[in-house]
Image (tube, rainbow over all chains, first blue to last red; front, top):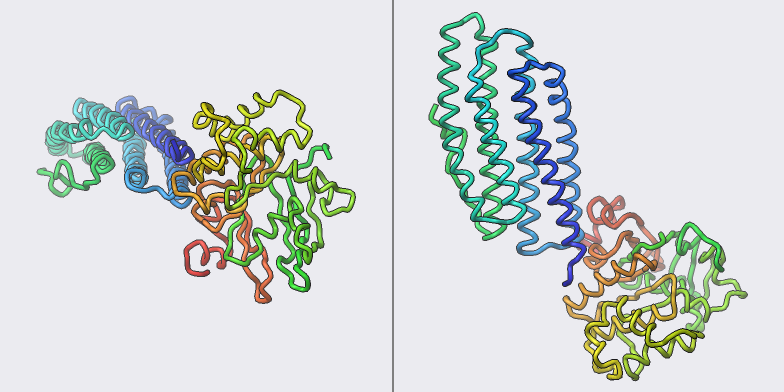
Amino acid sequence: MPRNTLNRQLNMVQDEILILGSMVEQATRAAVGTLKSRDLREAKLVFEQDQIINEKRFAIENAILILMATQQPMARDLRTLAALLEVNTELERMGDYAKGIAKVTLRMGNAEVNLPMVEINQMAELAVGMLHRALGAFIEENANLAVAIPKEDDRIDELFNTAYSKILHEMVANPSTIDNVNLALWVIHNLERMADRVSNICERTVFIATGELFEMDGMDEEDLDV
Amino acid sequence: MNQPSKYAIETRGLNIFYGDFQAVKDISLQFERNRITAIIGPSGCGKSTVLRAFNRMNDFVPSAHATGEVLYHDQNINHPSVDAVQLRRLIGMVFQKPNPFPKSIYDNIAWGAKMNGFRGNTDDLVEETLRQAALWDEVKDNLKRSALALSGGQQQRLCIARALAVRPEIILMDEPCSALDPIATLKIEDLMRELSQNYTIIIVTHNMQQAARASDYTAFFTMDTDRSGIMVEYNETSLIFTKPKDQRTEDYITGRFG
């Protein structure tokens, strides 16, 4: 079957996207872990290693542009490359969220802060799980799997709301720690946004399979009921 | 002619004239081994003239003469001591229009090889080269069939097989797909990629999309104000088609010139 070069290079880019995705998953887990452990060295590492994610994003973008320029992709191939470009950007931004969470740990240092860790951990696990499955569906171009994933975002929104009220209560109860407790709002915000970006990946999967572009869960950050 | 050289072929200050007219001017180019290099550019920029200089096909044009060097295994092939027939065995050529002999598929391959002194098992040679040219599966059941009964794309792959049968090092291709439909074209491009593991391929093409798809390196030629061909830019294909350095290259590949 013709187009071996295009197929081979496309597969290489897809592999790189999967690697970038696993780097983001790992960074998110590690960053959230440092909120509890207050391992500041680890937090600094996560913070600094976002640079590697950024560099990988640019390398992937360059590879996609070269593929577009040299291989003249059409129809599904073109949609796949356009979607890869989009997903690449989403992953890089998710990496920034992980970096932001690591920065919160660095800011808090060893200060005693009462954080809603149960909700934060659950949000992180759910978001990372969604991301993992969304990337699998994306690479397999499985639209049926992809449409189911954004629905899980409801659970993340619930956890966000619970964590949000807990943080507010803590601010009222212990005003002296308000500076640090306030930082927890960043954390839950980042995790909530991460799940939203997973939905964007799922939208691109449907786009590859059907050519249709639409918003899946209809919930942007600004729609959030807080 | 067998000592190793860094490049498959190299030109230094190559000028080619047809009578008084200078067709190409001062071409210095190095062709990497086991890579596909494309030469692109508008009509009349001398790309085919340069390609034909690599196995002295310009010898057949009485008014043509060259100055400068074409180095192959560190030897200038224009030197009188070089046997042009032997040279063309090592540097084979595939032309624009498929030109199989009006003989059977089998004989198309066996003939040239025998004339070049092949002494081995001809059946094996025919099978091996047809496999290398990705044609074996389509023709193996009737090798005695006339080559002229094949489709254009199959004929071109047969011509590639015929070129391979004399064990060349370099394959020159002059617009090898311009007479073929798009699918046959893509098959030849995949074949080129396969062959580049064992051969150096230099292709001249009008079709810059083909150069983009199929080659590792691209040389862009254009016509100078005095109408001689000059080389503007030579680089990795991925760079030529995404970040060309010269405005003339940019204008050509974006379709704003020519």
